[in-house]
Image 1 (spheres, rainbow, N blue to C red):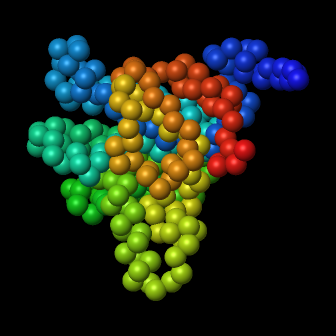
Image 2: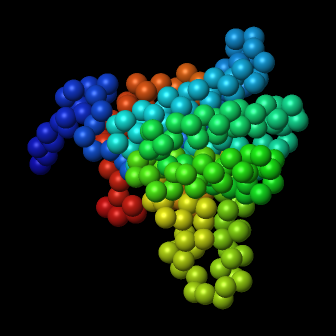
Length: 245
């Protein structure tokens, strides 16, 4: 028996340049490829990180404008401490610059900000800027942008397990999720990794159990709004069964 062909969605009839009507609530992005972007242009690695930082602003603003509720990005992992000291300091200087500008603009843009990870080991001035940014924006109702800084998925899971063990409470998926850095944030429907790498690299290991993954060859500084829009349209065509049929 032949099945009747399904009516095409509006996204299909309008093309992948159009923003789909049904959007995910939460997008997660592994911002990868900054160093390779700089190397391809004969530039120092920090030039790539600076370009990646600027692209983060563009993509975060775009997500806010189209109505995405949550955006979580992987900025600095627990494994990144193995990089050269001057590169780490350069990344921290970019974070300082971003936080300074964020504190000036967040009231106007109504962007909520949250940092996920063990920030206790960061320089004192960055910790203070993080505290101020989270405090100033906590009552805003716009998009919640979460930056994973000194974050590792395995460390997050171990931390949650230790908290639950110490409390003596019942261990359930709900009680475990409540002890993660992402407590109160829905799991991401989409996780994007530019740069051609096809792995999670210790990012949101618990939260991405049923996430739809998109891997692109574009290096992060070149990842565009158009490419994100195409991914959003592809997402609407996927059948998410969550283990069912």
